[in-house]
Image (tube, rainbow, N blue to C red; front, top):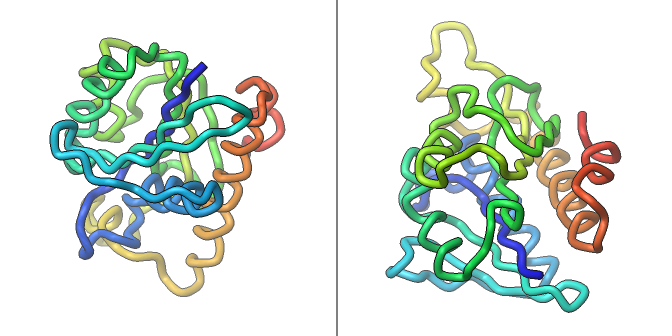
Length: 189
């Protein structure tokens, strides 16, 4: 079996540690722990790292299409590697949860998250696993765009890092051969 772990975010230094890049930060930490590095693949508009866990090939992917066009990179990769939606796990930020809180789902709508919306459109369905990491709601007077493209306040940084750490732990637990159902019951919330 092969799995693809996709972290959603926006490429480029200016977005590096913004709220919208929780997915990128999670797969970066996972790659670091697995001792692998990312290589930019222009054909697929993605940075890709390959690891082996328990004899299983794992692709770590960061789409370089920007958040709102994530599906444009992920669909061709799934097709190229001959993977099904059940082999896909996506990590994304979640404005509907407090900073750092995990919400894991086996399927679902976009909930207004444009990266997920793009994936649903390009993949032709919403039956794929996801880990959503809370980034909190916008401050009074802030737009959603201002919020998701901002960095965490000093008092939120620790919670954000705990959320990323917990997401990596959940992915590693899942890759050890535990079902996603068991992973959800251990790490959700």
